[in-house]
Image: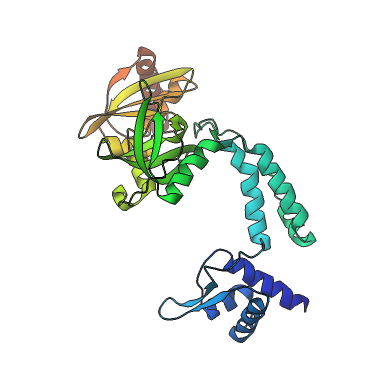
Length: 324
């Protein structure tokens, strides 16, 4: 009986993700025969859960669309994933730490002993990684407002702070992308007639518009690729002890994809762009520029030029020593 109950709860957790799976796939996940899985499905139906049988190619079983939601049921792997997520989310969202801690405590209290021990084994502390150049955590309310408009496919109006004064934009919001601890909105700007990749922390949403829109095809067919290759995505050079720039003989989209967080990329012409970035020392900044393996020009300031010369001389001495 205990094994049957555990298997049925496992099935319920699988159906909770909304997927349509064949009896064979379900059997593989719970480690039972197809016949046993079908019997367990009948048990769930007897308990009031509407499990639909989907016919044809791609068919199988799924939780009915009109069914009441099942209780939250986690297997051990899901519990660990949820526990880790709840502990790390404050690193990218502000104003959510207390709620995340309460949710984690509730999760631990509601879990069976074995699952709780597994989840509690993962105690996570977030620390800043200086190579990521992370942005400060964003307000959870801003993400919720923009994310709600995306879900409902409603236009969103925001005050957006770019390089100058804030401007009010009417946008068709399509996707949220988190990259290097920064939140970006992929949206179509109706007034400008173009796609934008925008820093969400620079957006102040207006009240909901309740105006629907039809989804469009995102550039490149992938919002992540669009954000990573957009040189005008609203980034700003981070405050560092040393900050400089150089014109690179590479396309802006290429540099934008591999530039560290906290840097800016300015389009110059088809095959060149200006990269502005910072670091903890001039040699460190020079080293970051050299990772692009491209010709450099218009290097500023003089301290950065001197650091590049010093690195070149140091490397030359090392090569001479190795050749002896």
